[in-house]
Length: 74
Image 1 (cartoon, rainbow, N blue to C red):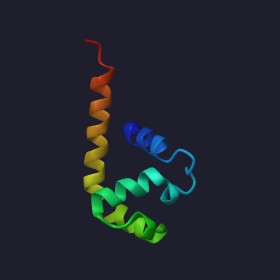
Image 2: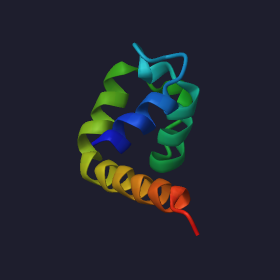
Image 3: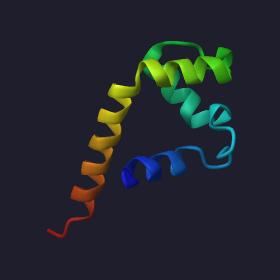
Image 4: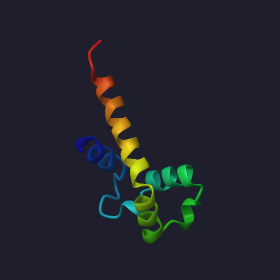
């Protein structure tokens, strides 16, 4: 859970109260779903998050694992 929050905190830098305005998140959604970033608004971002929630949870788990492995001492 902390990994998920850390990723969201970093990804929404500058737009923490309005994450749908974050250029990084808009770019990620555009890359993943092929929806143009310029057309994304609050409802389309929330709709995307709701319908893709299991894939997103899987992605956030994976990023947490990668961060833990990167911090592991050789």
